[in-house]
Image 1 (spheres, rainbow, N blue to C red):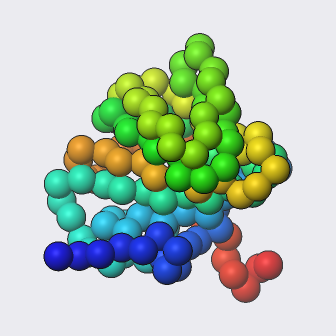
Image 2: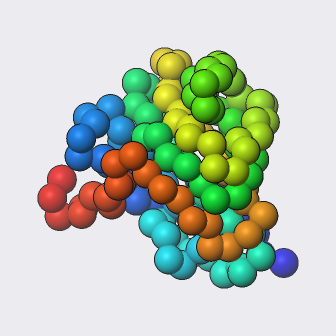
Amino acid sequence: MELVRFADLDLDAVTQDTDPDAEWLAGFPFSPDRPGETTAESADYTVVYNELAPGKRIGRHTDGVDELLFVLAGTVEATVGDERATADAGTLAVVPAETPHSVRNVGDDPARLVGVFATAPVASTWDTEPAVVDADEE
């Protein structure tokens, strides 16, 4: 059995250069081709763990498959297609495949999210391509 403690993951800082509010921490604990530490590789599913500081967001993008998005902590506003909803800890949302979506932390505390996809790898298309921030640049 592989156990992953999100609090123990080595997360990467991710940004989008055209949007100063697009800034988050990301880890893909089962996907070696993505940001963050891989602890156990899988070809059957993808899991992403994200942390967002208050006021920050994950920029708009589209995934090739459905995503189950679970809010672990904090309060976020999710925009999925033309719909917008506020979700707090304990909320599970389904983001349909090929639907543009973004998430913003609208609370006063850090937000922690887990996204689960039933395939690996996941093809994502971004309005603005994200980039991992080099720790030496900070």
